[in-house]
Amino acid sequence: MIGYLVLSIFLAYFLAMVIHAELFRRNAEKKYPPRGKFVTVDGIKLHYVEKGSDRPVVLLHGDAGSSYDFILSPLLDKLAEKYRVLAFDRPGLGYSQRPSKDGWSPIVQARLIRGAVKQLGIEKPIVAGHSRGGATMFALGDGISR
Image (cartoon, rainbow, N blue to C red; front, side, top):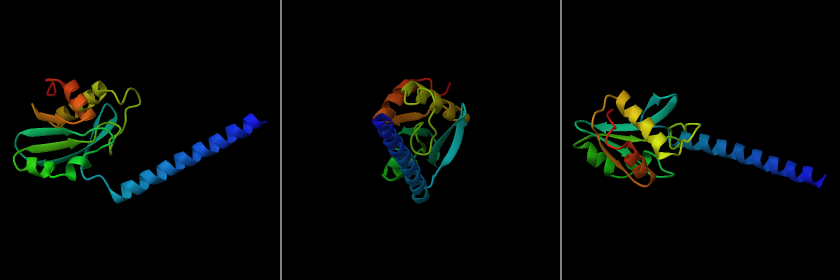
């Protein structure tokens, strides 16, 4: 009997946390709507912010970040003076969807970013990433335009 009570309390707490997280997400999206565009690769919607023109530069943020890391810093605007800058929300972060399988793997993320870059007609971009974005950048290798 005590086991059922403990289980019921746990399930009620878990449900409350799920509801809280969803309300938090909705509130955050109202305060900070997506500023960019979306491209779909293998059924996964990826969000990116684009600014500038000329040679393309792809920026990949770190863990627990988003393209807002670049929007809120002077980096995006400064690079956009000379380059076409695309700052992606890595899969599962920001406004990009998370793949259901192995979504946090830099290899999976690189495959999706590579697909997005290809769909956008970008060839041989300069790629910069920090933290986990750096791991994704290295997983892209030199074959980003393939």
